[in-house]
Image (cartoon, rainbow, N blue to C red; front, side, top):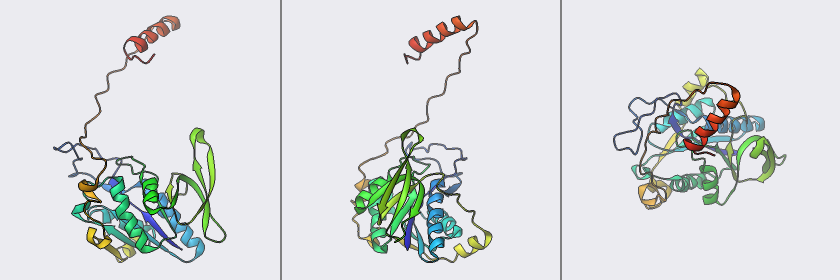
Length: 265
């Protein structure tokens, strides 16, 4: 069993986010970077499947600048076997489609049984990679997955996904496929000190655009169908109003505010 896991390096959710001078990026000078929390569920699930089978390989894949290797090393410290990193200036400005095209080339060269990823990255919060990557590959996809059971013949799995109202939908899916992992699927393990030391020596290969056989018009700003034009802070929240008096008077005043000021009724 050979499992690919997509990982992304994102700002720590506790970091204070500031917009850069060009208003198109965030200021990164004092940002702490981490492995995307939802990707931890994907890494853990891959490791559990490998351990249950007592054989196989878990490979982490990422597209990003050189620092993205820190997140990949975290996944390898958890137990992943090796990493494949796409790092090239031509990838800068890639939208979800461009990123998916590049990652798909890596995936196709590795012949994975299936691919896992987090349901969403906590930086841009798009939640599109599972679907777009599956479309580029021509594979099935399911997300957000909260339970996964391998088929006895290892040619597929039964997965549970959350749908509206908190209900679960149970789906039998055949491999190859892309699965987006949700919180609750498992409890990600902490990287042990021996694991951290071993991760430093595990193979991590870097690939450029020319290595995967794509043109610069497929990725980056040239290939982007969606372009970020501006970042801006949300407007300052106005101070709340406290309404006092008997219940009937308060209700009448509240309705007036909702109708005339908030204009929600």
